[in-house]
Structure formats: structure tokens, C-alpha cells
Length: 467
Image (tube, rainbow, N blue to C red; front, side, top):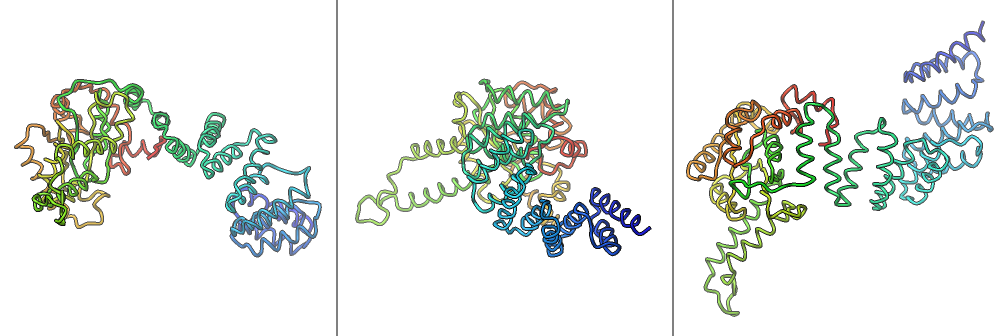
């Protein structure tokens, strides 16, 4: 009767182990040991593993030591001790324990022994030894994905990016169903390091699978492969706004226009350039008569304003990476920035500076219902009324400037998401072809880190989004 109960507890404990109920499994094994302290090897090993899962590392270590003593012909004790060392981040001990298991049980070796040891070797900075483990596994266990992803990670750590890309490509092509977000992120990192931006863009686009989005995705793919010039009314397009107005969505829509490349945010770096220029001009004017070496500001007034602006323009082109397009001089470049609320008295002179920096620009002033903006995640740490007051003042500056300058267009978030008349008028203003089908498709693609629209939230939940 006791033997039957003992066996039942063992089986129950093993079942709990398989279903992840670690404490229940431990309780069963302990109850079985009270009937017969001589637990079989598989039960004792499972008991140790469940203690590991419960982070009871001392108990787990004692059990695995017992396994080594009582069952010297079984690898479970050595494997268990290696796993405990790994959990405790005792990497050298983990390497040693895996080495013992590999040495003592050559006929029972398994791929995960090599893989776990390789991971510990990486933590110790022994990348070459880790690569040897993975290389052996590629020969002996070619159908296990982790040997390829492991090789890719080691190659990345060694800055051998071509090799890393090779193994990420193998991982994606041979094991597509096992792809994880970390794979995407690490392959993107490698492509960036290799400056293979066209491949990076294509890789990003391949992640969007939903049928409604394909018109938009295909349009972007077409433009990224071979951007063709398009005669527009402007040479540059700048989206001028504040946080949570749908600026990324507008950026995405504008990038469907032939010949247009609108980059994303740059942290207001051009305002920093404006401040530098403003400071220099002030000193240049103040000390313009410093013409001799005997004067502290000697030569500051000699600089050529036209030449200086040409250098600024070249810097701006480099920041927007215009050189990545062979026909960049024929394209309409621009960017969007949401930090105009950080600019107060300088707004109008800054916009005038941008006119020089980006000749013949279209300024698109984008706004949104302030109550909705103030309660969004971007502004959540600020007082709602203060936010609305500040942004209302900024919007007034936008309107006043737009009223005095023909290169300006005002549009709202609602115009965009409803595909209203304002959006169509914007295309006319720019001199661009208006294709409603592409815009409708664009609205099906996530263009935000934290989308508020429920139908867009679903897209973030159910598709591969690489933001």
C-alpha cells in the first residue's frame, strides 16, 4: 500500500513539474521521500530542478550533490549543479560543471550542454571558446536554432558584423516560426552597424503583414528602392508642431509623395545651430572693427555670411543623410520636429533662420484639440491647464506667422485621421498628387509609440512592430 502511494506521489510530482507547478511538485516529492527516502534518479533530479525554479538554490545544490554521490553514472547531478551556478551568475563554476558533464558522459552529450556552457563563456568574455561550442553544435546538431542565434550574438560582440548577419539570415530563413522580437532587434543592430540602410528598411517593411496596410507598405518599398524626382512647389518640407499631434502619421503620409523624403525628429538640433549662429552674429556685429592682431576679437568680422550659411546647409544635409540618395539634389527633403514648445521668443527668428538653412521650404503647422493633447502620455507629468495654456500661446504664434508667409500651411490632427478636405488641400499646396487609397492604407499602419486609436492599438498587438 505504501509503495503504491509512494509511486503515486512520484508520478504526481512529475506531472506538476511538467505543468510548471513547482511548489506542488516539491511537496509531492518531499511526501514521497517520507515514505521512502530513496527517490529514483528522475524524481530526485526533478526535485532539484523545481527548487531551482523556486530560487531555492542551496536546497537545489544539496540535491544535485546527492545525485552525484548516489548516481555517479548519471549526468543529472552535474547538469543540475551547472544550472544552479548559471542562475547564481557564477559563470566560471558553470563552465567547470558543464565541462565535467561533457567529459564524463560523452555518449550522453546533448546540444543544450554546449549551448549553456557557451552562454557562460560569453559572460566571462571568452568569445572564441563560445564560438567553438556553437561551431561544434552546427556540425552535430544542425536543426537546433539556438546554435545559429548564439553564433550571431558572439559575432556581434566581436564586432564581426558580416558573420553576425550571415547567422541571423540563417536563423530567419530556416526557423521563421521561432523568430522573436530580440532577433529582429539584433539583426537591425547589425544592419545599422554595417550601414546597410536599404536592407534595414526592407527588413522593417517585411514585418507588416496585414492586408489593408500593403498598399502603403508597397508604396514605401517602391520609393525606398528607387526614389524618383517629382516637381513640387517647394524644395523642403518641415512639419512644425508639438507632442502628440499625429506628426509621425503625417510624416508617413508625406513620405508616399514622389520625390519627398521627410525625416523624423532630431531633438531640435537645428535650433541648437540657430543659437550658435545667433551668438556668433552678435559677437561679429559687436566686434566688427577688430581688424588687427593687437585686438582680442581680431578677425571675427571677416567671416563671409554667405559662405557660413553654405556650410550650415551642408551640415543640415549630412544630418538628414541626404547622401544616401544618389539623386538627392533632385529630391525634396525635410523633417518633423515636435519640440517647438521649447522655443518661445525665438520662434519667428528661428523660422526665418530655417528658411535660409532649407531654401524654399514649406512650413506645415500641425495642431490638435488641446484637451486631447494635454491628457496624452507625452504630457502626463505636467499640469493639464499649464500645458493647454502654453500650447495655446504656441498655436497663436503659428497662426500669426502663417498669416504673414505664403510658404505656410495649417492642418489639424482631425484633418489627417478623417482624411478631411484639409489633407487634400495640403497635397495641392505642395504640388503633389493626391492618392486617397494610399492614405487610407497608411492609416492602417502604426505610426506611434503609444497609439490612442483602438483600431491602431490592435495593429500594435497583432503585428510585428519594430519601433
